[in-house]
Image (cartoon, rainbow, N blue to C red; front, top):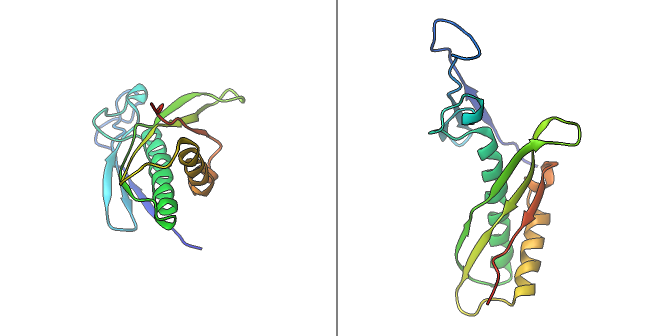
Length: 151
């Protein structure tokens, strides 16, 4: 249906190339012309000031869920004023004993224009968004949507 392009650029900045000393900093460039600095996670000798691949995966899942959710709401004429999510990904050993982002919990908070849909309708909307999210459909990572309690 469509293609999406990304390029990764890295260059050695040290005289040696030892595991303990080479820089993990690199640049990701996208087909849109935009780009971002990235590195490994600090636990893997990366730069804590830059995005790392694990964060990018969590962010992609969160972003895709939100975009799908907003599209569903717009089609149903449910007006969303704002959407916030503090997603959390867990890097841990998978059943094969390999490190993987095995699960991601989304914590969406939605502000509605006017009366908010009832709790079950909101759960259904998020379930539909999860089923329609291209990124969630592309990974083995377990993705859960943890909605805030309503009062």
